[in-house]
Image 1 (cartoon, rainbow over the protein chains, first blue to last red):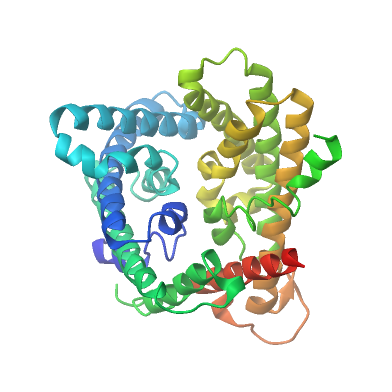
Image 2 (cartoon, helix red, strand yellow):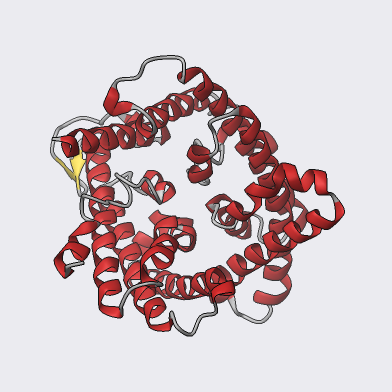
Length: 186
Length: 193
């Protein structure tokens, strides 16, 4: 399951979740790592909380139609809370992750994984969190490789109309092709 | 600003997907066929219009500090409505779009327009902006969906137009990135003229 989530069904390259930060903060390997560490942290925590809420509040009370609203509120509140706690407890880590945290609320990967696990592992909290962590690792892997490639890209001359986003997307396509090679691994 | 300009702004000049490059996740994920692209475009357009309307009506009531949270709740409400409507009336579309319907909540276009336009302009202008941006998004998705379905399955709207199996890659993930990248480059080229 872990290899499947990291390599085969890579959250960015196969499931298209979290493309915005993928394109936005992947200019340097350092920032890419910072962002993915923040994602790893929030995704694991958010999935834990949303699964618990889903299992013990929404399903028993038959409120599944509130899933989207409650999940996004939980994620937004959680991100805010993590930010405040980090600021107090570990200023060093806060400085490293600080600027990426607010961005995560609108990272569709976090909400996407939270909703995905309610469909894939409806009754196991442990499996859900494990899956979220593997997805975040997949995110980290893809965004770091991509940032490395983009650093190289700055050294070559790109045709004018292709500069910036278009060439980045095409490179992501080639990367996705490479990841398709893992297809029968699991 | 004149009304027509607000409406048509989102079509091409400030097209949210192809020029501003927002909302990339659904753009890449649901454009495997023209039908899916149109469905997603219309669902997002509905959410955009309704949330723009409501937020511009409420803009004087929402405290500045919690405005983003308030916007998200408004947007999430309309997304839930769309989600339930699609599940009830077009279950086929619901199963092919999957989790990308609830994910309209985190589509940066919707929140972006709420923050950048609806919170500062009149109700009618916000309505026009919502329609314009929604149509622009739908156009962009349809172009990409059309190309991917044509090359990937040799068909349009499910109708085979060229015999054969199609180039599988265009339906899969890499094709999404390639087609999107080339479409943006093409639009830039056309705009320059």
